[in-house]
Image 1 (cartoon, rainbow, N blue to C red):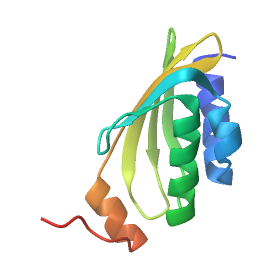
Image 2 (cartoon, rainbow, N blue to C red; image 1 turned 45 degrees about the vertical axis):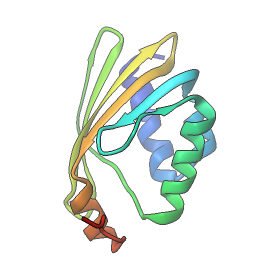
Image 3 (tube, rainbow, N blue to C red; image 1 turned 90 degrees about the vertical axis):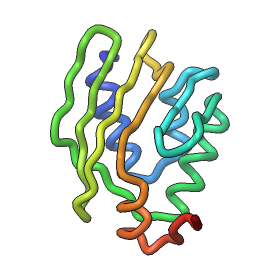
Length: 119
């Protein structure tokens, strides 16, 4: 599967809140680094991260742009509440080896009614 097709499927599974199938799209030793958080290493840890995040927040990804360049897919997204971000996916042999996401954590926490970090 091409990087662009894989990320299209990733968005579908993300919007379904399916942490198990999402984790299945990653290599066993993959890294998911949302820059507002510490990197999450390994498929099992990535699945646990998605399970935790889906349990605490109502998240939905609307694709604004999706590009492919060689082994990379670049996703520009928004959510129904107006949050925007982008993600970079390194896809090797049909699975995600590395992912990095950029988004505004403070806006996300406020929109979701979640506790803000203490100073």
